[in-house]
Length: 245
Image 1: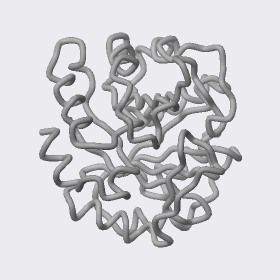
Image 2: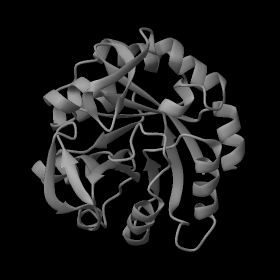
Image 3: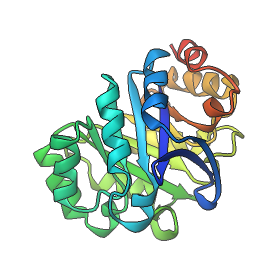
Image 4: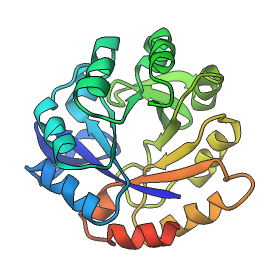
């Protein structure tokens, strides 16, 4: 299971939100490139990037910070937040040097765009599915739909999708542990590899996910994204990677 550190950007700074609430922000650095180099040095093979301003407002707002990150590291990067048209997807994948683009809101609002992007960039598009009580939330998690997360995954079956990132919003930033049950449900129906996100706060949470990956029902879970626990110093990235191997 791959351990993927997250860098969430707002106004060019590295921040973390609690349960996606923009008024519950903690700022950790004003130099995202330094943080990216730190995660690379500690063994990260992929860095998860989120443009929080873009997720909320619908267009990329942290281009300078993102460009600084991609110029600073040599590992894979995946970006979500504000990728709501083909021009932006093309820009981040072809001009900015991002490895994989995460599509979230458009999965519900512009599903044809997701199909087009996956066909043009096979295995470089990730389905970013953020759920509240099993229902998909969009636009920076401010809007909760009536669509079930598992139905969104099923809708895109057959496309050359790289992975599904499943985030349980109620767990995100809480450090209370991931929603293993919901993540397993997604993994059971997904034809794509699944990456868990939200709630990691201790090494035992990493161990629980790693153990789940080794079971028949959890074998489709290939990675976990973590942020706040690393920034708060609960444990080191190297420790988490060793635990997950």
